[in-house]
Amino acid sequence: MKAFFKPILLSFFTILLFISCTDDEIQPPVISNVEVGAVHDEDHSDEDEHADEGIAHPGEEMHIGADILAFARIESITVDIHSDEITPDAGEVAWEFEPQVYTDVKYQVLNAELHEDIAVPANAALGEYHLYIIVVDEAGNSTTAEAHFDLVVEEGV
Image (cartoon, rainbow, N blue to C red; front, side, top):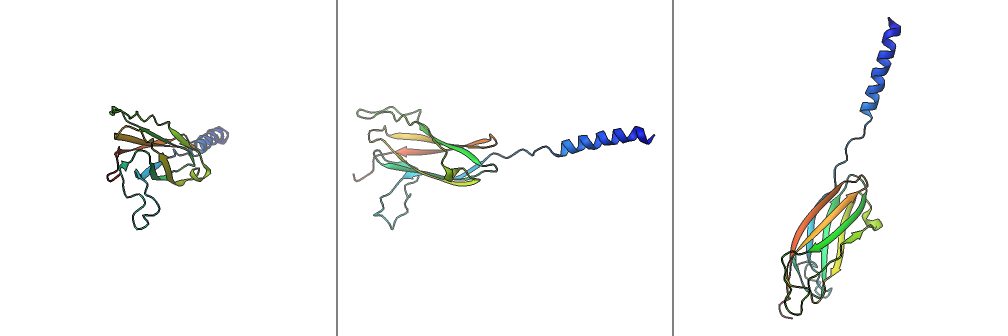
């Protein structure tokens, strides 16, 4: 009788071992504290460097930033900017931003701080734009964060 139960018990424990050894699902990355706005000149040291959150100006740099928490190493961060609602006026062009994929070593970690400055064309059409930040980790998980900003002419210029 013992000879009969030994193979059954061995099979049961083998199956139990395989079931308990499966990998837990890795959570997708988390994107928080998304920032988008105009970059100030360094001679305004008494002002917050990114004080114009949600505002960008043609012909200047625009700051984008975010905190990223990943449970598997970050593989890439993609930044995409577009607008579906803007009709360019005379002398303006629709800003066709080519999505940028960042795979820099500084971003291939578990916790990253995205900080990039993007040049806005001087003749870009004014209006509301959408910013998308897409993070993909080595486990194949992805997360997208969205923010909006207005492209306006700076007053007093």
